[in-house]
Length: 160
Image 1: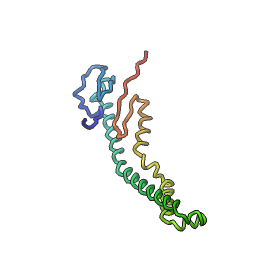
Image 2: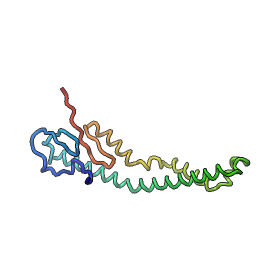
Image 3: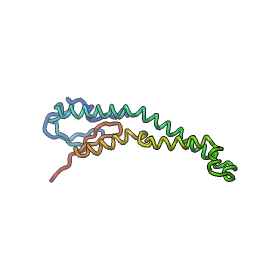
Image 4: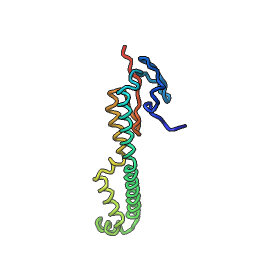
């Protein structure tokens, strides 16, 4: 299966020029007005989709780095916690003394807490947050978008 293409990536010449038609694109049956193909509305939608996909794709490298940092610090914290819990001295000394005896766990735990206060939980899902907010706004226009920023045109509701 090839790469998924947005409906806006299809050349304008492939569509007829009558008023309203039904077409199937990637298994989704939609109705659309042909009169907008090649006009400023279509160009604006294409520009919006290009800008949205560019913005989401620019977030991906930073998001990947933040995810790796979160994974490494979480594994370090879990490993330190395991060593801290299985140490027989932990039960015999005070809480702060046991933390002092296990600096790896203490430092990794403080680092993890600091990362959450710095907002790492938002940074690892930033592209999803952007896409969800765009979906909310685009729903007003009977459209949506996927997690990569590609626009999805939904079928027009029939008013009877």
